[in-house]
Image 1 (cartoon, rainbow, N blue to C red):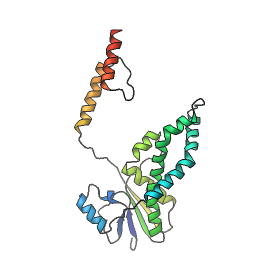
Image 2 (image 1 turned 60 degrees about the vertical axis):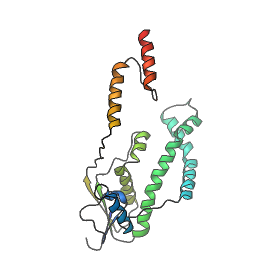
Image 3 (image 1 turned 180 degrees about the horizontal axis):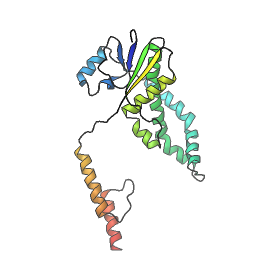
Image 4 (image 1 turned 180 degrees about the vertical axis):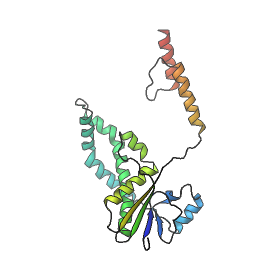
Length: 226
């Protein structure tokens, strides 16, 4: 593939070189290079860091929120068949979610626009190293969690580029499995032990969100006395 520039979406491979390749962002070198090397790569223009104008971001958020908040609130109300639920309550509840949705699309589209602006009439091979993530989410909580996931983010970019592709662009997915790094954390072990003990000693109560250990202890003792 002579005279074709390679764009790496999520991770570089052994064929990467600055002469005919471009990494989309610093994450493409994660686990391959150290932080100092990645910074030096940035100075040598191995990848582009897109600067987000704060004022434009705020304006875009306001516009998106105003346009979609009622529509999304009514959708949730109808979907859950909640005729008696006040629309204002739903609006207040989902407001943070609407902003998360906006930011996800806003960031993704900035990278798509960058590539279209600079390479639309050039021959490109757009490479995704990892197998694309499932972009269809069962609920908003899953979507919210996945917004911080590299493979989910890069899959969105890959999808948008394919939808807005130039006739000179080619796409390749290597379909390697994406595995998140497992970091040892003593607090996670402590929490698991705590939950295990709570299930044994507080089996007579139903766990409720934000109920702390001492509240469970008091309620459990009161129920046992009765």
